Length: 337
View 1 (tube, one colour):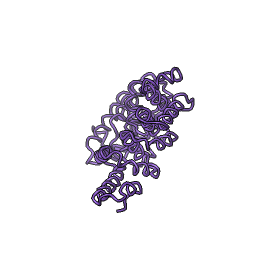
View 2: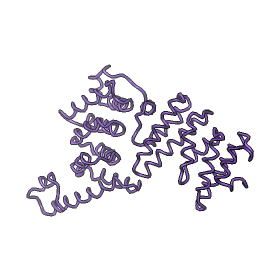
View 3: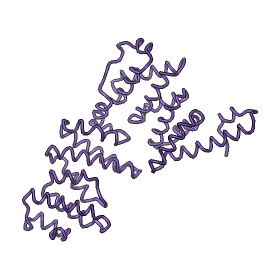
View 4: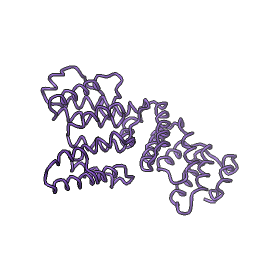
């Protein structure tokens, strides 16, 4: 295993035991960085925590990986580690990360905040300039601007005095996240957005919620990692439930398609939504999913049965109705329940 150039420079003519320790650390860092892309969340979090402990000794390798990796999840983890180290070498990486937008840009702002608070000389000035540009830029995503403003307000007193009224308060981070999402700028991590739905979906225009459901569906379809794809699906279900609680069928088409194409259990929010606003057009998709459900999925099958009969009863549909006949042809067992 070769050691990095920086490590080699540090070793010089030092004790061979020191060189061996650097080699060992570099090998560990390589393994831990690979683990940042692991699908297992516990394994990933453990690697992240260990890299934070290793600290500055891992910075060079982290920066190199950030520059070469196209995986945004790995990039986000690296930025989090670089923020914790407080190493000024992370400043150029943070400035480049700003151009990527979304969660990557928000994480880059956190590094700028640390450099502003603890950096010296030119790095301090560069961080301040970058944060001011973000805070006053008309094209900056709202939540990136909100993060920059928070960083400036948390800056040392002399910095706050120097900028004076240059920047003004803006929306909270949660409000900014919601506003960006409503305009189609989704975060990398859907869990962050799910937390603000309860506070905003009740008052949001229904057309906005429908567009957001469509945007989330597109992101869900392109997610390559099953855990992240499941998170997007859970977010979409929560949005459907929020729409249904307002008695709207504006996104019923997506509910029908999702249930009809489901190859396994969906988050309960999907069936909760269809029970609330489903009509006769939903019976056949429910029956299709019911017929497809295996004996190893009894809970999912029961949930489909319950949704089917709730919708049929609310819509006053008897076995002679054409929609009921088509549905029961898909899954005859529903007629005996």
